[in-house]
Length: 56
Image 1 (cartoon, one colour):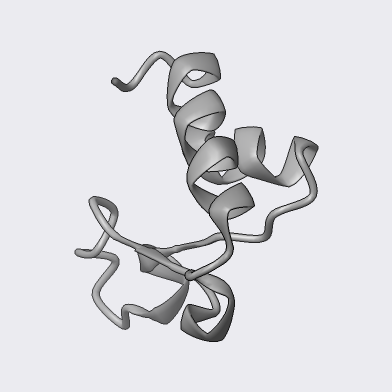
Image 2: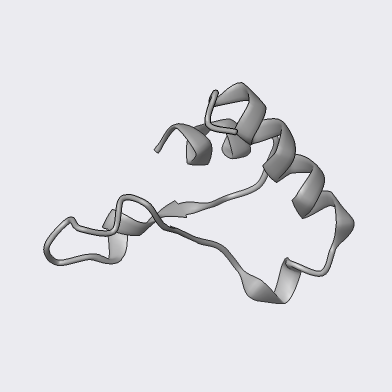
């Protein structure tokens, strides 16, 4: 959830895995639009979001 919030602050929407889990057992996963994942900015935002969320 923290990573999704940090990415959203940068304009990238990531959906926490539990949003798509009936059993709330996917908290270690994220969903995002794979049609956009070849854009270099996505990796920049993910790296910044990881630092901001203190996950890396």
